[in-house]
Image (cartoon, rainbow, N blue to C red; front, side):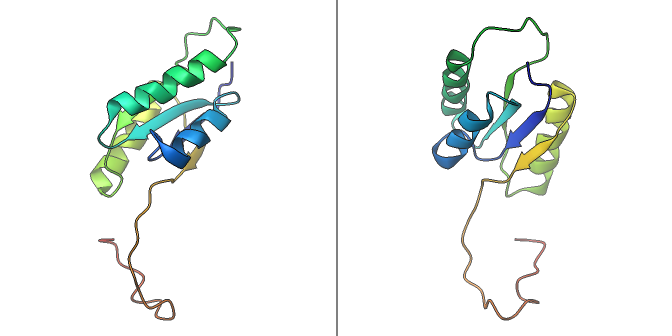
Length: 115
């Protein structure tokens, strides 16, 4: 069983779910969701079904965490819970995203902690 842990934000559907499935063979994976725990659990079930039963380790293979990654406090909770449950964190894939139109040539405008 892999011991390294990957945390993928916004990973209960779409590209995030595909990333979870790609890493599931080699990593223990934390699936982050915002509002659909059922989708996150479905991704985990699909990954579990695709893996061979070769280990009797007591380490969790997957874990789902609800967090709104647009909120700093939720991001902190996401990382803290990952460490509490999985015992470590080796890879973070920040899959969540949003769009804000800015002047690309004005770097000062693009540095905004609130964003």
